[in-house]
Image 1 (cartoon, rainbow, N blue to C red):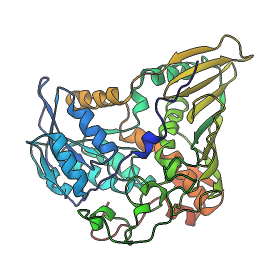
Image 2: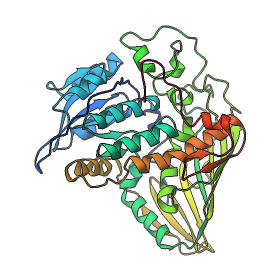
Image 3: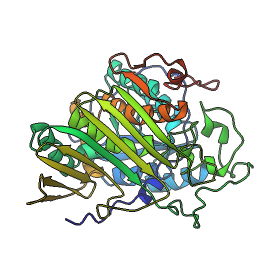
Length: 430
């Protein structure tokens, strides 16, 4: 089977941007939807991935786009045009959440703005589709899962593999034991040196600080993150290379793959040890361009490798993927399909990939009506994100960390434990 890469890493570069604000809102009750009623959606963060959601949800016959919100006026104007003349536009998402005719919200700003809007939406009685990773850090993910449970809200995380038919089929085979006992899992992401589009291996560059673009409310874009001068390398599309706003490739893309491992193998992690660094790029990024992380889990070991400076693809078109090494066979999978390779390498079975984004959105809408548990609820999103956050914590402190999955604490390491959460810039609070 040829794994031609229909989904490329470039799709990730068009990921979320935009803005959001938050403050405490009084709770309210959502209306009960009839089977034939349209679900009225508001969008918080409308650049990149948020703009994609606006179009795809809006094309569904049972959805009405009623409001959009972004702190970048250019994104907001484009979103308002796509949403239609009846949609209201805001620069402050508190105003969007105040609207009585919004049933659910789609939250797609940078990672540091996932938690507060999601929690406030739950308090306001609205369901949520929020982009991955669920939060900027582990404490935020737990708070979001707890808020969804407390307020009985449908909260879906954008790990769309959970709704992809070939992923569902492959995970079922692993859990049934079709490939035997899995003792090792290999997960990887690999990018070429020019993937950021600058050419010449310059990455995101080292631009000077300067004024924010006209029409951008930069203070609101920063929100709960520390006050910093504006810099284009820390802004749209490349925010995830900076610890204040994201966790780099490891937590922002790796979460898709880690989530599948959790789904197939269970959600407990015992320890994480990481090696890597900025070995190639001399640009403004803070996150590593190269990493190897080892996770010890009950009954198996997982190894994750990530590189930004070499796109060699030993499996033919698989710049991302997972290999589950079982005692009977190996299952190799990515977004284009999967293979089962028996021991000895004969009679390889190949299965094509299928759609994920639209089925994932359909699952969200169906659960908004039925109130049934969705394919990737807030707890699933939280647990799947823990892998990437722990890898980044291990990298940042420079040593192995021991994880207590029951208490969600790092054992005996005060420095590492501080990175489980973050401080919030006034007036924002989790």
